Amino acid sequence: MVKGRDSLKGKGIVAFTLVAFFALTFGCATTERTYQGTAVGGASGASIGALIDRHNRWRGAVLGAAIGSVVGGTLTEISSRASREAAAENRTVVYRNPAQGTVVETSPLPQNNASTHCHKVRRRIWKNGALIKDTVEEVCESDKTVGSYESY
Image (cartoon, rainbow, N blue to C red):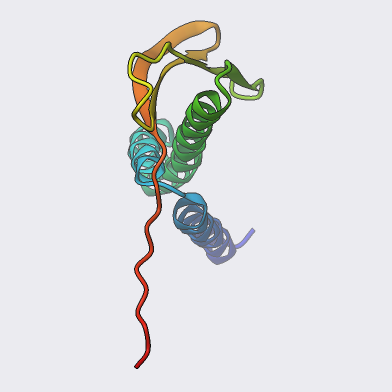
């Protein structure tokens, strides 16, 4: 093959990956927490990708960032969704992702003060059978108030 074609092919892959990365990062995130999970996953993936691809560190970093951001954002979004469902339905919610070996389990905790619109839930995340995160968080409902203006 001609060297010029190989370099164009590599640039095309990098360009496609960057477009997919930004589309997934900014198109699928619904909360600030999801943005944070996407950013942490992207940074981790970029570091790991640069270390793995010894022939072209930039390509490895870009591919690692794209994959890491998708995985980080997805796991964060699934965890948040599980917490909201557990609080709203007052039941344990379990999400499994066999492809990644990840299990997210969220259970509602007993409420001490029923006058608030907040519910405590316990979230546990397993990766390949090992517990990697065990947290208690508060999920709050909000009363939306919309101001209106009258025309004169």
